[in-house]
Amino acid sequence: MAESLPAFVGRRRPDWEALQELLARQRAGTVRLEELRRLDTLYRRAAADLAHAQTFYPGTDAHRFLNQLCGQGYAAIYQPPRDRWLAVRDFFRREFPATLRAEGRFVAVSASLFILGLLLGALVVLLEPRGAELLVPQGVRDHVAAGRMWTDDILSVAPPNAVSSGIATNNLTVVIFTFASGILLGLGTVFTLVNNGVQIGAISALCAREGLGLKLLDFVSAHGPVELSIITIAGGAGLIVGQALIDPGELPRAQALALRGKVAVKLVLGCAPFLAAIAMVEGFISPGSLFPTALKALLGLTLGGLFWAYLLRAGRDASLSSTSLRWAMASSRLR
Image (cartoon, rainbow, N blue to C red):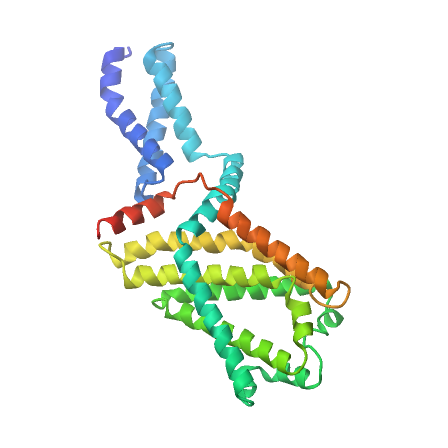
């Protein structure tokens, strides 16, 4: 014989309330990894209670409550693919641009370091005749000495789709390295940004000095604005990692790294589809003479403008993620 409904509710209520609390925290994104197993256990117990209530207490408030509670638990544990796609959509519509704006000072520092490298590289080549021998690779110098761009032969050795694939892989490697080298207290990212800037500045100055400036502009104008923007964003992500290690605040260094690392990874992941798209431009449009330089430059300026308009305008109604909020709360206690 089944126990009375009040006895059943009184005996099982603590587990139901515990499940309710975990589900609320799961929606807020504050559930710890070790608590997920308990959430799953409580959900299974609630599902068994629901089956018991359907048999012995149908139509009661307890039955309706358990039905609703199990529905929430099922949605949390067995989230359907559609919700995941919605999460991806929301990430690019709100979370990624909002995160970038919240961490804009790191991206600004990254851009400053890159520009510093550009100026240093260009000045060394323009002021010192032998500077190019130190900063520009031998293969590039040989092409420039012959009055040719090293990019002229790209489409003769591989079709555009293969070129795009190779460029995307190479750019992704650069972005990941720029970000990941931040683990060296940020010094790795600083070196990578300045070093890349020096090389690009030196090559640009060499081309300009040897009368190939317009040819270089013809090649880089279509894809350069977005590609260089993504590198500076990856640099900003690396600097976030470095800052978490150098100045963790009142948090343990490992916890600060975990919290800020999530923010940095969001910036890098957000750039990934744009990096793939710009590789298509670099493979199909930038090389060769099929498109005039003016059209390439107009395309590059348009894509760069749209990219930054998206980053600065999209998701302005989005709040900071729970990770950023926890970090902001921890930081505020230091003041």
